[in-house]
Length: 168
Image (cartoon, rainbow, N blue to C red; front, side):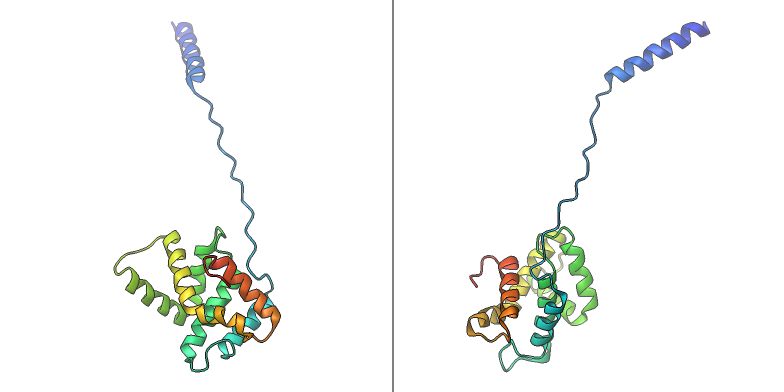
């Protein structure tokens, strides 16, 4: 009886193995990160500081406007919108800049009151918010207002990357 039970258990196990369909688990392939619009941190810092000092903005801008525009440029120059970690980087950037975070939160509340948005929607809202805040800087590229041609090229690259619908 024990031998018969053992034989049936082996047959049952073999039958289960035959019935199981092998499905390979897909290998997780890390797609290469797209390059940031400007890969030079020194240049990015110089552009942000130039903006903060008021050299790239209209003459009558407030400190808040310059600070927000500078913080937006700092993020957009260093991060590609297709970066798989762009949302995480945006949230960290907003945590580090309370003025920018407050302005962005007010924009979101006006745009989508009482709705919690996900990562994809947050990036879309960020793009619209950023474009609104940086339009005068992007327009100034044609007026040679940016202090150097290197900075103009970096800002144009950033605008082409983040705002492809805008002709720069």
